[in-house]
Image (cartoon, rainbow over all chains, first blue to last red; front, side):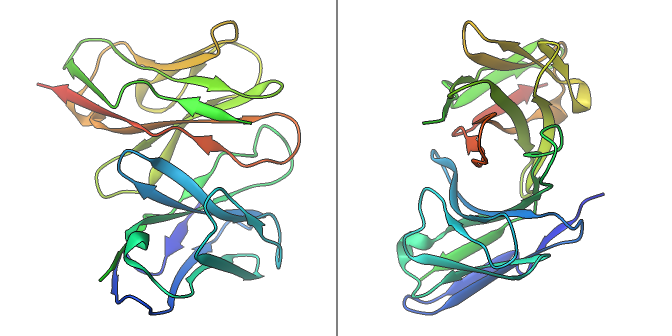
Length: 116
Length: 114
C-alpha cells in the first residue's frame, strides 16, 4: 500500500513564525501536491511538483513556498505565518506516466495548523 | 478552465435506503473523473474513477458512479446505505490533455441515519 506521511497531525504557531510542513511518500511517485482544506471551500491546490526540484503554483500560492530536493519529500513553507493560514493541510502523491494510473492521488492524514 | 460542482452541502439518508451524491463538471476535452471519501479525522481515500470505457464505474465499499457525458455529470451511488458510509465526499476532475492537476469540488457531507 502507498503510504504518505506528514510530519505533524496538529501544529500551533504564532503569527510571523516560519512554518515547515513535511510530507514523505514511499512509493517512488513523481507527482506530489499540497492542498489546504477549509469548511465550505473544499480542497484548494497550493503548489504541486512533477519532479525533483520542480514546482508549479496552484490556485492559492500566495504566502507559501515549497521545496522538493528529493523525490520522496515535498515540503510546504509558510514564510511568515498569519491567522488566515489556519487550516487543514493535506499532502498527496501520484504516479506519473500512463493515464490509467495518473491522478489517483494518495493522501496523507493531514496537518491541522492553528496560527495564533 | 476546469471546474466541479457538488450542489448539495449535505445529504441525509436512512440506513438501507439508496443514496446519491451529485457531481457535475466542466472541462476541455474528455474528462478524467474521481470520487474520494474523507472519514472523520482522516485523510482522503480514493473510491473510484472514470477514465474511459463503461459509463458505470464500480469502486470500493459498494459504491458506483455513472458518467453521463450529455449531462456532464458523475453522480456517486450506493444501493443500500450504511451508517458507516457517513463521511465527506469529494468529486474531482481534470481534462485528458496536458498535465494539469485535479480540481476538487467543495465536498458533500453524507449522513446515514440508523
